[in-house]
Length: 303
Length: 303
Image 1 (tube, each protein chain N blue to C red):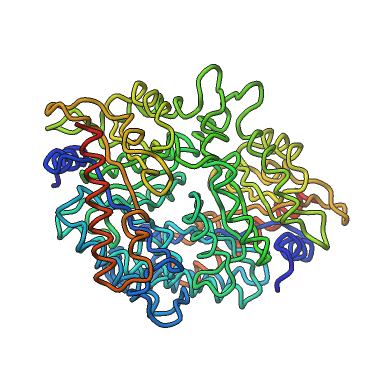
Image 2: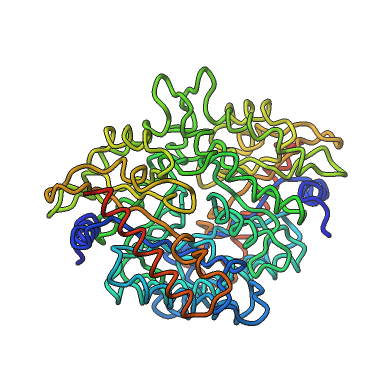
């Protein structure tokens, strides 16, 4: 049996001294030149091979430097069944390299369908098993229950979409529901569930929340409503949020550093501007530079 | 170029005289005896073959009898990459048999990730291309835009989760947001988008809404807010809603029948109680009987 997700994640973040998570968004159209192969048509085997090569090369850069990787399911699904195969291989390789895998799939459904999603991604032995999954709360508490139950028995984690980083995140999430914005109501009702995914070695819960880096004030309010939940903070880097904004929902841990979540960057790390038009070595150097910058900025922000 | 989704769907519904849609939820644990093979472990090739055989047999029963089939993505994803392969084959066979395919995947994401999901399932030539996709509105209007844009250029349809059929559907969807329940606010803000997926031969829009059969009163209110949107109505049968409840959001069409959506049943059709313990012929007879019953009840309800 694996240790609770929250303990595993926080232990790695403490070791590294920063909460950086490396997103993996292998958008076929934006794949850097050195990885491109054949026609780059979504269903082609060569496209899947190109994406696999890119993911493997990126894993080699981030292994040992970040606590977690966050593959974005959409870009694998876009390749058809070969994409699912690439994702499974990537996940296995990442876990073998000591990385925690958070699959950004934003799933959400009801009843036996929610059970099937939970089993697909969180059950031991499942072909696409990951450490944690992003889930969508719109269908209500009973739709999250199968995910919580599966995570509970397998040492898995969840990140519930609470306040997202896009401008439209406001449309429904910030609507005033009887005096309290909806995103805080989501955090409120999840609070009892957090106990069930509580860590043993840390005060954190693996019933995490997604709170975008572009909304630091909202992140502080979510933190008040959900003191134990890990945050997954997207939007650092390419979406314009600073490291300071990204850690707004973290709190002082035992080592006096801010902790309680991970901050993800994707395109800023693996499609760095400095690599444009260059060869493989240029891409590697640019990725290493982008990683060092992101690590440094976040290490300073949590100090 | 294909005709607009709304026109294609409504034309078939009018021909058949009922709005039944056959859900396809090949839950491995519940697969009827005649289809079971090997250990039925999710990652095994034999499990994928068992599901493929089951789906093919069910397609043969429903072809020519329903306007659309609605595969539930979770049950294919649970099989790993082989499941994605089975889903792609099922989709191709269904379309070849004249069935419209609505993939129930409940996707939702932002920016280039939403674009990738939209392309994966709605772009011509995509390996997993379907006719319509269910999507989750929680991330806001800008998260739906890439799906609408893709559907617009490819004659595709969308069904946005508005008021779901599960008890927890109330938790957030029915919260009072300044005097109006949230699910109606979702319908309100989508209304301008409906024009973009409007049919040419019918008054309907392929910017559809999911409105559960278990909430007939809410369905009538959504219909007032979204007069042009097709409804996808799950929850008929196994979830306990009657045919009368299921058509609550439909309105009188040119043939004097109630129209403007499809009503889906899944387990009640493909896992019928009457087939329990029987052989293949018993399952076929039970499915045919369940289909005839559902068609008859719905034909009567829309008369």
